[in-house]
View 1 (cartoon, rainbow, N blue to C red):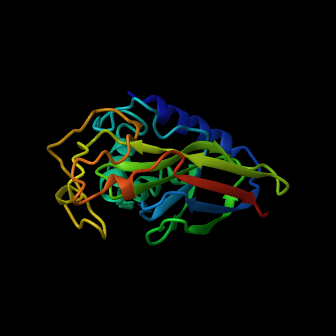
View 2 (cartoon, rainbow, N blue to C red):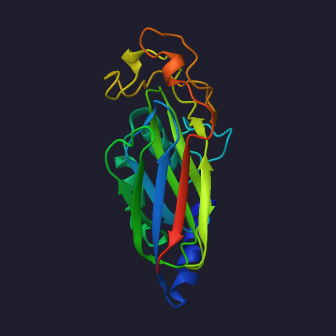
View 3 (spheres, one colour):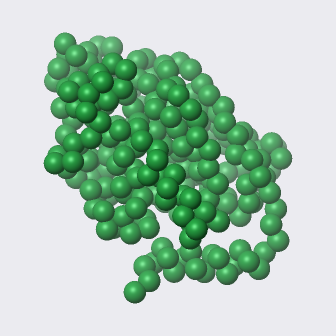
Length: 233
């Protein structure tokens, strides 16, 4: 039986084939607003209107969610390990690639810094944008711009403030043994630990191991990032 998302893709494929393609270029600037949290490399995706996740979703569910669990698994990899490869693999699938356009912002984005990437020659029917990256040092914290509208003209600029989410796929031990990255260099994933089991707003650094991750330095208040999007063509 064809899933709802695959039925939607089939309908969109027919619709797209009957329309004249108009290309657009976008400039996307992301700024880290935190005091001491780094962002792993960001993936920025223009796409048809569809939500990658919702608060309350169980990302441990490898059969549910968008694309029959593939997006859940890919988001888990980003939130726990900062690994974009599974998401890129999903987006590059033949059945998906006509409905997305993406770019990766390389390297860590340090505190107070900003980075600009460009989405070029984007099919204008890809009217929405999403962005994902891991927060370091956390167990499974991530930033998300999810299914937001792209500017329709060069006269418009869209600005979005991003909260920090907890993927709910790994317990927040705040132990460096369980956290990757330059501060901790720990294990990136905990396959036997399913965490809280639902996506929610991250509670920040609570001081479970202050000798490793001191909340006086690493805790934050939302929002943690601002994304500014301009249409340049």
